[in-house]
Image (tube, rainbow, N blue to C red; front, top):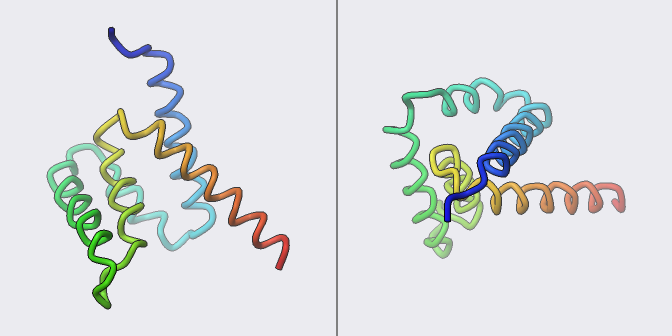
Length: 105
């Protein structure tokens, strides 16, 4: 059974909107995020993503931490479309929770 092309396109647009939202929230990251998402950068993006994911599991060490896992997954989702849907759902939930937390404080 092949995946629905409309669903994939919708997930890709939603994925891009989340990147845009991150860029608006943190303008200093706008240039690096656009550069790393450029076509042809997969040869750097995939190994860097895997390093971040492995580093996320080494959270007991001082330099590494759990923060590396979502960044690695986000970078990997740029090239692996099957990760986009679930990852975007997690990003949206996290952004909503952060916004609610900020409103309470």
